[in-house]
Image (cartoon, rainbow, N blue to C red; front, side):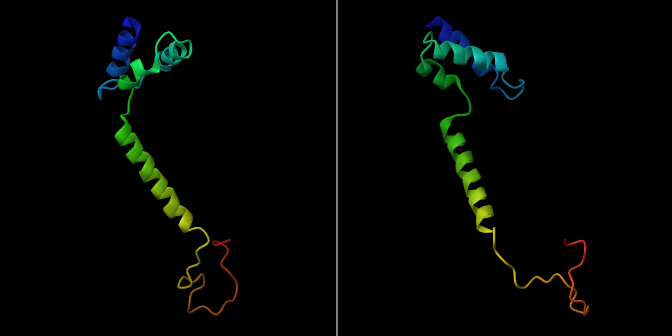
Length: 97
């Protein structure tokens, strides 16, 4: 439909690097038109950003980064010491607490 083409043109305009972020009002309009069945989602999907491949890659990288951070939880480094080896004190320094 013509409405889908016009809305798609506006959505693609805001994907250019020199333009500001897509206005929330434009996204709200698109969501309202799709929800009310005026425009099928299939007509707008090609105009949305980011494309599938970069979005899936970014998600996989974020998941990998979080899993690596989770693996470090609870790991004790026995080589690290809180006390100075030359110091004979048996208490933990206040800055560590």
